[in-house]
Structures are given as C-alpha cells and as structure tokens.
Image (cartoon, rainbow, N blue to C red):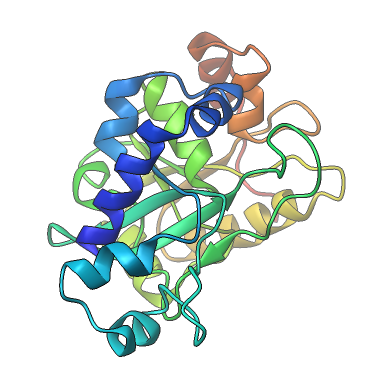
Length: 240
C-alpha cells in the first residue's frame, strides 16, 4: 500500500492534466498536496510497477488494487492515502472527468474492507473545536485555508471506530460541515448525526454553507477563510 501510494504521487507530477484538475477544485498548495500524499492513478500501469518490486498477482488482487483480469482498480482518479500508525492502510480514489474538464466521471472508489478511522485523527484530535466534513477535497481546501482542525469521515455515516474516535473526549466541541446539495441529504445526515453525538456528550454545531455548496466548492467558487469563519460563527445546534 505504501508503494502504491508513492507510485500514484509520482504519477501526479507526470500528468499535468491531473494537477490542473486539483487547481480547478481550488487546491493549489504544492506543499499541502505533498503532505497529504495526494496522487493520480492514470490506470493501466500499477500491476507492472508492483510486479517489478516483487509483489505477486494474487496479493495485489486480494488487496483490491487490481481485478481478476489484472486491471487497475483505480483509473483516472485522484488518490488520497489513509494512514494508521504511520502506514498506508487504505486508498480513496476521487473521480476525474473523462476527457478532462467534460463528460461523465468514473465512480469514486474505496478499496475493499473498512474505510478506516477519521482522516489525520492523530493530529486533529488535539484541537478544540474539531470540524467534521464529508470528503477529502473538503478537508484539503480547509487545511489549505488554515483550518487544520478539520477531519473527514469519507461520507456522512461514521463507522464504529470513527464514532469511538470522536466520542473519546466528553464535551468535545464539534462543527459538522456537510454538503448543502439541492436534495438536502447532507444536511439531513448532519442533523441526525449531530443529535446522536450530542446524546453522547459532545457539543455539536451544524455549519450552514450557501445553497448547493460543500466546503470544497465554496472555496473553489472564491470564498475566503474569513467567509468560512463567519459560517462557523453562525453554526447552530441541531433541532430537537
């Protein structure tokens, strides 16, 4: 997994269209991109690379990095490695339109198995308050804007492990900043989660962004750190 994440990081530098996609999503800080280990999976070349390093086909297939025909699991995706105890334990692939800038995108993808814990929890857990977002692009743009107290659940539903991480400190202050999409699925999930977390002893506020936005799209559309800070100031407790 470490070798795969490193390989995808290298591919990001070899494919300018992938870097352009990151810039279009508002992520331009090369140092942060390196820190987060963000990479790019062009597809079609991972098996060959790992075979040269001595990894057998069966291992790559069981890990989920390739399918039974040897094709890459990740293709035309921005990749985010998820770490635990200093090692990459999972990879998340965020789709990129094909061709770049137009057309339908491939589905987002996780490897098989649990999605693991909250992203970068080893560093974020010491902050008060903590900001919880849905996606890793949301986290990336918030870190870029100085909100390093942000973590990500990779979705709106917490695994038992993620729940245990968030509730390990009674009274923790938490802001939930989920998608403000037109169907309000993100906000409904935020309210349901906030009520549960309040019952578990946390102090929870729900962040309301402009309609149709998530944190990533909000910053990509030109919002500033001050704009988001104002949203935090206006955040409200969940309704009973």
